Amino acid sequence: MRRPIIAGNWKMNKTVSEAVDFVRQLKALVANVREIDIVIAPTFTALQAVSREIEGSNIELAAQDVFWEASGAFTGEISPIMLKDVGCRYVIIGHSERRQYFGETNESVHKKIKASFTLGLHPIICVGEALEEWETGKTFDVIKIQIIQCLEGFSREEMERITLAYEPIWAIGTGKTATPQQAEEVHAFIREQLEGITHRQVSQGVRIQYGGSVNSDNISDLMAQPNIDGALVGGASLKADSFSRIVKYSKM
Ligand code: 13P
View 1 (spheres, rainbow, N blue to C red):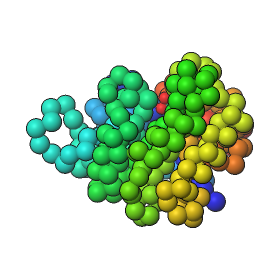
View 2: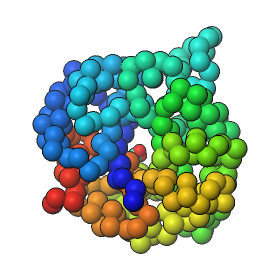
View 3: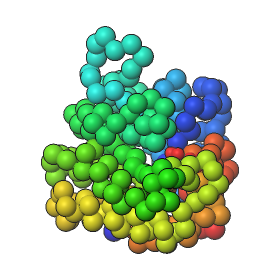
View 4: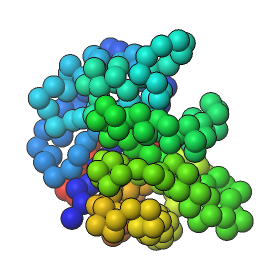
């Protein structure tokens, strides 16, 4: 049985005081949720303040990216040590926006995952196809290459730490979601691919989130699918009430 994981990716939104306000509201709204891992991924500048605010609560912290070196002359980058230092448990790696605008490749994603493991962080690794690839039936080919190139060579113990997020690029911020059935088909395919590179038991335990225009109206149908184990939420995670409704989907 995989424990559901719902994460809010704030992207480039919220000042420190806005982030702290949000967390105060969210803590109260989800205080009774026990059966789901709740994660928020603020910007780097808000991590420390949010970390203090969620201490002792059922909310966990993620960063939106990481660099693969521990320290040194890498202007503008943040290392896994620094993320661990401010209290991050998770780190999102390979988001399509990083791939699209900042030159992230499967190779750099692999390096970042490896570096995260050395510090005991839990990577949330994003995969997904572009609109044209979806329309021309290339989804499975693209995902297969992403999975193999991002994840090959990791040990069983390392693979047990990962979460995957399937985010079709055409569904991000567009209001278009894959139907639960379409998403399930890709999630099942992802699990099959995982089985090819790790032990079956490990692949059965890996949580696979869906991301792309998730909201409180569509979350229940998505979560009802056997291979959808959570959500990576963008826009609808920016308000505490809408994010809490997603987190509490099973009670709605
Ligand atoms: P939206 O929920 O705004 O479509 O964003 C999804 C996403 O990219 C989460 O990482």
